[in-house]
Structures are given as structure tokens and as C-alpha cells.
Amino acid sequence: MKVSVHGCGYLGAVHAAAMARLGHDVVGIDVDAARVAALAEGRAPFFEPGLTALLAGTGGPGALRFSTDAADAAAAEVHFLCVGTPQSAGSGVADLQQLEAALAALRPHLRPGSVVVGKSTVPVGTAARLAAGLPDGVGLAWNPEFLREGHAVADTLHPDRLVYGVPDDGGEALVARLDAVYARLLADDVPRLVTDLATAELAKVAANAFLATKISFANAVAEVCEAAGGDAVALVGTMALDRRIGGDYLGVGLGFGGGCLPKDIRAFAARARELGVGDAVSFLDEVDAINDRCRDRAVELARAACGGSLADRRVAVLGAAFKPDSDDVRSSPALALARAVAAEGADVVVTDPQALALAQAAAPELGYAADVREAAAGADVVVLATEWDEYRALDPHALARVVRAPHLVDARNAVDRARWRAAGWDVRALGVAAVRAAPAQSSSPTA
Ligand SMILES: NC(=O)c1ccc[n+]([C@@H]2O[C@H](COP(=O)([O-])OP(=O)(O)OC[C@H]3O[C@@H](n4cnc5c(N)ncnc54)[C@H](O)[C@@H]3O)[C@@H](O)[C@H]2O)c1
Ligand SMILES: O=c1ccn([C@@H]2O[C@H](COP(=O)(O)OP(=O)(O)O[C@H]3O[C@H](CO)[C@@H](O)[C@H](O)[C@H]3O)[C@@H](O)[C@H]2O)c(=O)[nH]1
Image 1: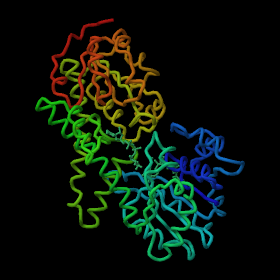
Image 2 (image 1 turned 60 degrees about the vertical axis):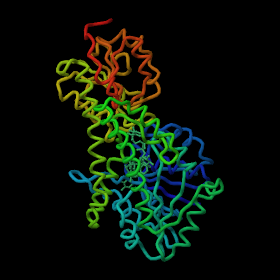
Image 3 (image 1 turned 135 degrees about the vertical axis):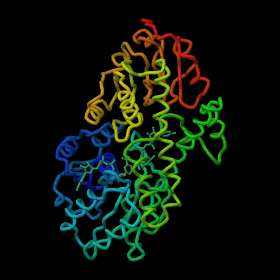
Image 4 (image 1 turned 30 degrees about the vertical axis):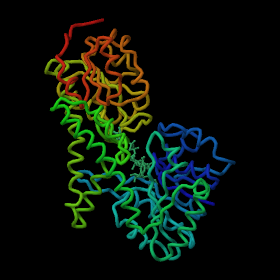
């Protein structure tokens, strides 16, 4: 089938390549000429494990093309909308300008019988409004995407579920078209749920709101553990074994960031307020506030490790990406923490295996280093802010030789504390009162 994908960012580039892998003839459209040029050469424009291989192995010539011209989508039978829906400046409301612009560019090229399929995350009601503006004979479905960055390829090719939101009128034909697009996934028994448009839009933000709530629940319990003398990591371990709860998204630490959870819970709350049901989801404000406090508490641990003040201290921050296996720094908790530490007068040096370039662009005021050894050289405290595997596996003995003082703030509960302590480190971690209350060790040079 001929397919077009509008917006080739973290979602759209993977979706386009995955559609080609599923056997379709795909054109990806993006207004960013550099991004289109990279993709056209088979280069992933951002770090996403497996994307380069997917771009390289997508079938015969012509099966996957990229263009900046929406006219090149004219032959497609299905047009996927994958453009960004960021948070509007100064409010929680979703900014739909990219969506409006992409549809305006596509509209003159829509043939009767073709179908527009929204994948971007939108406020409920958007799909019905956009459908009303389409030419006669062109249908619209909403098929929200649930992929995670860092796992985007596998999540696209092996999703937990497919959700098709369709209008009452013409719904069957839209379902048949989407079934044809996803035939190979459906053959693998991926559950497919057909809903109305509003339910499909809400299915996406409800899932993200639930995940954010689960993370903030764990971090709220962590605050209580710190005050009461408990260990939040051990505590959530007990909860995780309850099959009704499960252990996913109970990771205690710096909290959630990225291009999705923070903006999506705010947009959900803002839309609910517009609909007059703001009270129903007002708890999401608290979810957001708990999340913000995670960074404050991590800064407090770093301050305590430095004897009460961060002024003129050297702080190494390991991690800039919002999560491991991604170079995305949008709303990154690690960068927010680094900025907050710098604001207290510290000399901050950030490192990350993949996100350095994007971090430097987003926060040019911070110091950067190419690797852990360079970042940690002469540091008064090392803060582990993004739990990359290579940071989990660090040798505490080797690192102790380069720092000025062996203080570690494990803001992601990522390392084996006993192992680091045995190597002479003072380890502080979020959600662990005993660790947090440990008397500050000497900050005299050790190397
Ligand atoms: N990133 C994720 O993991 C993920 C997962 C599921 C859903 N989503 C949702 O998908 C949407 C896209 O997110 P993203 O992270 O890929 O954003 P992104 O910013 O990485 O990508 C958006 C892309 O759209 C392009 N674009 C902007 N205006 C355009 C236009 N008029 N025509 C064509 N292209 C245009 C941009 O140049 C950019 O490449 C958002 O609604 C997001 O909430 C994202
Ligand atoms: O126990 C946990 C799990 C995650 N996180 C943090 O939560 C954020 C989001 O993580 P994750 O969900 O893995 O990444 P995203 O790529 O942002 O994916 C989310 O957002 C996407 C965009 O909407 C959705 O498609 C996905 O289903 C949804 O998981 C990151 O900062 C993580 O560090 C925690 O703090 N604790």
C-alpha cells in the first residue's frame, strides 16, 4: 500500500521505516530539510537503537523515500500525521500549529478515497474538528502511538495494542484500511481495539497520565521513606510482587521527563478544565509537583554531600538524556538537576554517551565533558542522573582515583550501594533515609 508519514521526528521517522518494513511503499514528509536529507541517506537524525538498521533494511528501492514537499504524498492511500504537539509557551495547553500546518500542506493533495490517520497525541475533540475540515470522500481515523523512545523500533513492530478511533459514519471502511496497513502485526495476534474518535484520543493521554501517576506515587512514598527511615526501593520491591500492582513505572528517583509524559499530563488537565471537569484530574497537578520535587531533593543530597553549600564546588552530572538509550533532552530531569546545581554556584560538568550535542544546544551555560573520567576529574560530588548501563557498571575504585572527594548521589537508584561503599564512597540516594542521613565524610582529596 502507498503510505505517507507527515513529521519524521522521534515518532514519525520510526513509523515511516516500520511501515516500509511491513511491506508498504512509504514517503516521509518533514519541513526540516536537514532531517529529510539525513533520512534519505539512511542516517537516523537522532539516537534510537535499531533505527539505522531499520532504515537500511526496508525492502527494495523506492520503498522508503523522504521529502520536504507535501505534494510527494499525493499518491498515498493512507496519510499518517506524526508531527509534534508540544506544550504551548506559558500554559499547559497543547500547541497544534504543526498539525494544522501539516494538514494545510497536505489538503490540496488528498485524493477522494484516501484516508488521514492521526498518530500524534492530541487533546480530545481535535480529531472530530480536523475531520470536519477534510475534502469530501477523505476519511479520518485516530490511531494513537504508544512507543517508548529507546525501544521505539520494537514497540512499533510489536505493540501491546493497536487502537483505531473512527467516526460513526464510514467507520467500517476506515477499520478495513487500517487492518490492511497493520496486517502483519494483526497476524501476530496484536490486540486491536476499535473505538470512537474521542475514546482513542483519550486512550493515549489516559495511559500516559497513569504511567506518570505511578512514577510519582513511587516518588511520593520515597519522600515519606526519607522522613520515616525506610528504603523506598525495597518498599516498591514489595509492591511489585503484587500482581495487581506490578513493578513497572515504580522506579524511585529523579522522576519523569521527555517529550511526552510532562506535556501530556498538563495538556490532559488543561483540556479537562476546558470541558468543565478539571476537578476530575486535578490530582495530575500533584503528580507534576511531586515530580518537580524529585529534582529539588536530589539537589539537597548533593548540597549535603558538599557540607551544606554547592557554591564553588565541582559537580559531575552523569547523564543528560531524559532516559537511557535516547539522546532526547526535552524536559530532561538530568538537565534540570544540572541547571539547579549550577544556579547554586557550583561548577557543573555534564556528560552523556549520546545526548551531549543536544544538551549543549539546550543548556549552553553548563560545562560538558566527553566521558565520565573527564567529567568526574576533581569533582566534589558525582550525581548519577540518567541510568545508562555504562554508568550502572562503573568501577567505583577507578572513579575514586579521579574525584576530589568520593561522594555519590545516586539519583536513579542505579548502582549497588554496598559495592560503592566498600570502595570508600559516601553514597546518598533518593528515597533512602539511612543513606540520606549518613554523616558527610571528609571532603579532603583522595587521589
Ligand atoms: N516521541 C515519542 O516517543 C512519542 C511516542 C508516541 C507519541 N508521540 C507523539 O507524537 C507526536 C510527535 O512527537 P515526536 O517526539 O516525534 O516530535 P518531534 O518534535 O521529534 O517530531 C516532529 C517532527 O515534525 C516535523 N514537522 C513540524 N511541522 C511540520 C509540518 N508542517 N509538516 C511536516 N513535518 C513537520 C518536525 O520538523 C519534526 O521532525 C507528538 O504528538 C507526541 O506527543 C511521541
Ligand atoms: O519507573 C520509572 C519509569 C520511567 N521513569 C521516567 O519516566 C520518563 C518516561 O519514560 P518512558 O515511559 O520509558 O519514555 P517515553 O519514551 O517518554 O514514553 C512514554 O511517552 C510516550 C509518548 O507519549 C508513550 O508513547 C509511551 O507509551 C510512554 O511510556 C523517563 O524520564 C524515565 O526516566 C521513571 O522515573 N521511573
